Length: 552
Image (cartoon, rainbow, N blue to C red):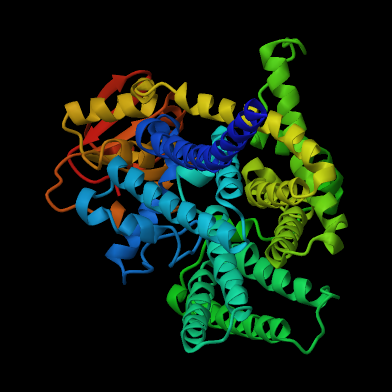
């Protein structure tokens, strides 16, 4: 009897220790995921992003410089690819006074963007009543998915354009909307009412700021939130129309609509007569005869965006083959699970998840219309917002499945390949050589020009802006376009300030950097530049003409 009692007490103590230890281990696991995924992104930004840096990645930096040289938001002397006066350039403007136009500014600006995104993503998920464990898994999977291919890393961690800034504002906006809704369900004390007013003001400010940043940003941020809140309320048959939830939703929609209108008006006022080139060129319909080609290209584009990299000679049973199969599985997972979530919508009781589902489908609808019927299909990276919202909806749905006993094991089973892919994404980042950029032609050209004391000149776009930033503006190169006619070249005003082509104070030597085909175009032209006295140097197959005066 005594022995039985002793064993019973021992079992109880063991069960108590297990109950105490298990939450601690889950908390530790969650913190490891949160710190590990954030560390991976920050390592990429500070250590190896420079290896994948090119002239397209410089736009946020140059917009920030243009703003600081203009009225603080926009510069009429600058020709913009896209007008986003209150966009990613603000993250760079913090650091330009300290480091100028340089890779340090680029790294610290991107890190500031990442930290902002990371914090508000966690806050948004917590407002959706995600546990620490669910938050850690969701954040980690999303961040590592955005490291899975060169293009995703470029769009989110190498510069800030409407796709990435739109998703950031979407996360911030959903946090405000869901927090306001959660406040409305609490006892309406004076403190709660004050908090509600404050967050309504923050939501309005969020809408006003984001809606200054082109129609693309509006479509990726404002419309998904408006659509999510509206559809969630209209389709909630559990709650009567006359309820506090409906009043809160109506007031939220009204404030968001006012913020949208004021933001568009403010954006038009800030932009003035300044036009955007690149973004507006892709805001049109394409030839209907090409629409089916876009449909056929969509699956492969989505796979490549997720990092599919397979050769014809790769075996199915090889490591590369298994990774390709898992990437295909992940693409199908991200495409199908949101559809299943929509089919199970009526069974999902959490309002935050329901709003997120509708926000995802509004984003997806906008992107797919532009991709299939417009000109967005010219680049696979334009599908990147769908990747973000698909990950969030898919993991929110998996969490819902996990809370149901009958589907919990299916949920765990689906998470296993996701875990492997995330670890592989970490490996992709780690295996990028730290100093590989020193072997790039742009870095070599920049170092050579600096050694020759050539500090101001002209070259084609893919050399000019990248070299300028890589050399921390010790060598400044402005963009020129080499033409096939008698002119030979012209000032490249795309992403440029017109003042860059005028005589520069204190500059007594200018150079023209050319590839072989560009040199041939110049020599076959009747450009007056050919009559100017110049010295010629060659390096790595490039020709450099050095002048004692400006060539414009």
